Image (cartoon, rainbow, N blue to C red; front, side):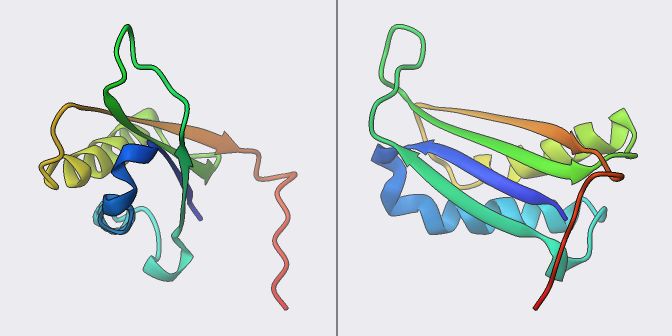
Length: 111
């Protein structure tokens, strides 16, 4: 855990590996998870609008098991956004959210 799902505007496709690395590094820096448990994936959007323009965007949803405090969730978002911002991408809205996964109903199976 967590599942870090990056949604981004397709004009940033050439930077997606750097963005994924930044999200992974941010999640690691939070010290809330073991490095090997962090899962990161990205989805590009061809059609999008940011306000009245077509500015670039990056949005990260971190799905984590319930039980973390609001302060821990905010710190996770802060570290992820900071690492993305360090990439120096301009004209880009960067946002992040944490989504709790109910511990009692979550199932994981390894084969």
